[in-house]
View (cartoon, rainbow, N blue to C red):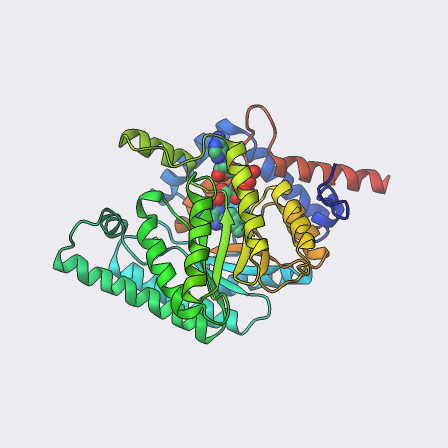
Length: 395
Ligand SMILES: Cc1cc2nc3c(=O)[nH]c(=O)nc-3n(C[C@H](O)[C@H](O)[C@H](O)COP(=O)(O)OP(=O)(O)OC[C@H]3O[C@@H](n4cnc5c(N)ncnc54)[C@H](O)[C@@H]3O)c2cc1C
């Protein structure tokens, strides 16, 4: 039984209305490859090595997996994707993907690109947020030292001041140009300084409206409590809490790291516990909608459906300006297109950047779409069903 009787995510005709038969066949081919666990395992290794050796495979990657999950290599490249999504009332969040950078000059370049995105977004009706990872403007070592509260050398103090200046300039521009800014959540061992600096900026810029949004990974067993505490602090200090709720992307890494370092595992005991806290978190935000803005970043049908029902229960309009649904570009179109069709605020992360730098992101997407425990991936089945439906509706 559907949680919301007025809504169904099973209508693949709505989900894939914007795709031609040829595009759908290409998507089907791609997902059928990603559905093969062994191929993804071997393929990711081969692609990384081939690109490092400058073998001519960039073109192939660009035409296939990159084209499916990314908007292009630059902001301008991504404009046709923004336009296409906008035709179906779906907004875009440009996500400059440059992972694993560790030099000051790269941090400055990323800052400049973030500022460029905010300027670009301020001139568009379809770019309501920008998004960033603090590890894109700060070194992982520095973030770890801050978390461990070890005393910093003079050089580290200076590096930290530069991080604060970069972060401040991005937040200031977001506020000045009225583009909301989302801060992604990362690994637990660097998350505390990310939270600290983000809440400092929220206190400064979220007095009138939620401009800066932090991310809550509900696969962490302490996160529902953290959400409540962040809300209480925001209320006490008189600012809006912007909250993006996700389940969390680094589960295996977190568990391995905790075991290696003989720390308590920060992750929930099982998937059910994560789901339960995710849904409780979403409800908590709706209950406090006059103080919290919610962005539900999820591909989970039930949680998305549940939020529509909760919004109704609390009398929140479908297009309430502080309530958002978010999916990644190239995934869960059945959720994005259906919700947008019903007038909900939907935004897709559209990553862009040089092919080589987007690879870690692409590999995470490929791994997510492999067959699990003998079951084909959800995306693969949806595309397959729609192809079947089109074939039969023609007959
Ligand atoms: C718009 C958007 C923004 C995002 N931003 C971030 C971000 O800033 N930081 C981040 O870390 N991730 C982010 N993610 C990724 C997200 O955290 C999830 O990895 C991904 O969306 C899959 O979760 P799901 O809610 O879609 O649903 P599902 O597919 O139902 O859930 C899968 C998730 O459940 C959890 N899980 C699975 N098995 C177990 C288990 N045995 N025990 C406990 N938990 C389990 C894991 O988190 C896993 O990823 C984002 C996703 C979206 C759509």
